[in-house]
Image 1 (cartoon, one colour):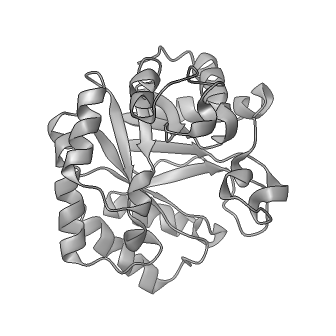
Image 2: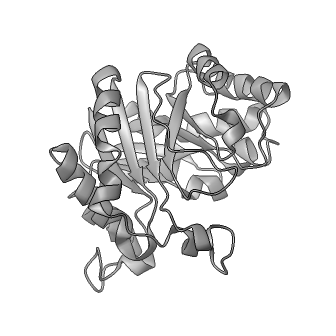
Length: 259
C-alpha cells in the first residue's frame, strides 16, 4: 500500500494556499486528515514527545490515519540520548501504536554523520532501543549510499529512506532502495541555490516540482510498492503549501485512492 502525505501539516503559511482563512492551529490536522491519510510529525525532533500530545493526535484523526514520528535530535544529531530517553520516547508513542496509527519512526541523520564503523555500531544500538517499531533511516551524506550499507540496514531491520534533494556535491543521490518491509521516499525539493545559502531554514524547501520531475519517481515507487508491505511518500517542500500541491500530483500519477 502506498501512503502519500507531507512532512508536517501545521504551517502558518498554509493558511490560504491549503487551509481556509481564520483556521486555528489546533484545527489544521483535522482539515489535513480530510484529504490525506499520513503525515510526519516533525515537532518531535525539536522537543521530546509525550503521550498526552500523541493521544490528542489520535483523537483528531480518523481510523486508519498514520503518523511517522521523527526521532528527537538527541537520538540522531547529538547522539546523546540514553536508555531512559529512548524508554520515554517509546512510552510517548504508545498511544499511537495502541490506536493502530503509528506508521513508524523516522531518523534523519546529519551530513556530519559519516559512514564508518563507529556510526554503524551506533545505528545498531539505536535500532535495538526502538525494537518492535518500524524505523526508517535517512542519510544526508553520499558516503552511505553503498551496497554494504543497504545490506547492513537489511540485517538490522531498518528501512532506507530514498531521497530527492538538490544535486550538490556530497548529498545523497536519488536512488530508490528497499531494505525492509517498509519503503520510504522523501522529496525535499531541488533548490540548490538556497540549500546552504539561506537566512531562514524554510528557504531551502521553497521548490515546486514539475510533473516531469515527479514522473521520474513513479516507476520506482510502484516497483517498491510491489515488494514492500507499505510505502510512505512524504513531500517536504512545505513552503507556501507546495508540498500539498505536489502530493496531489504524485497521488494522481500513481493512481492512489486518497486514504
